[in-house]
Length: 134
Image (tube, rainbow, N blue to C red):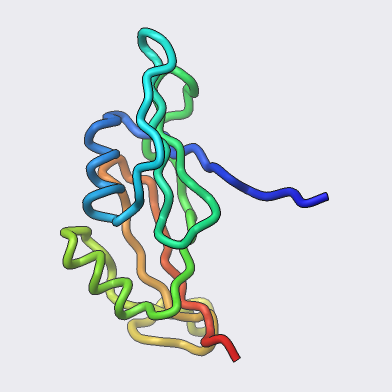
């Protein structure tokens, strides 16, 4: 039996602002934006090429906005991903890598090139470059 992670809830304070950020700036596709009750709204978005979506909502969860840390997106080209984020108005870190327990600017080895950004509520994302397919 397969167990697939399909959706991760990202707690936000303003659904419209978060939807704009994730769709217009981060480039996620809007899959769903629906009211499921008088005060409950669900917005689901998916990063390009991902099998897992994020879920923004009002009235479903009580998790504080901005508490998600360590959400990771994986890309083939970290420099291109960073350029795309910057081009869309996202404040993204320089490309960094871990070296002997410390962050340094630039590319490291395989799986060791990262860019960091946050949504308007402070939910923190990491973009990691995966090695080229052999």
